[in-house]
Length: 96
Image (tube, rainbow, N blue to C red):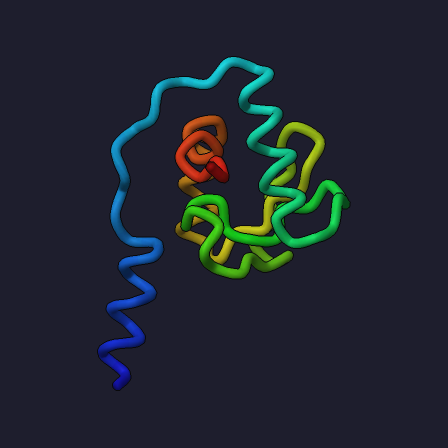
C-alpha cells in the first residue's frame, strides 16, 4: 500500500510534461486568475501546487510571490522549479 501511495505522489509531481507554447501576458494572467479561483476563493492565493498541475495541496511553507499572487507549492523541489521558470510552470498548469 505504501508503494502505491509513493508511486501516486511521484506521478503527480515527478515527470515533466512537454513544454507548452509560451503564453502572452493576457493569457498568462487569465491562467493565474483561473488557478486562483479553483479553490473557490478569489484571494490572490493559488492554494494548489502549480508545478503539480494543481493536483496537490500547496503549503504556505513553500510559497512564492509572483504577478501579484502567492503561489503555494507542495515541496521545496516544486518551489525551486517554479522559481526557475514561473511562466512555464503556470502555462503547463493552466486550467483548461
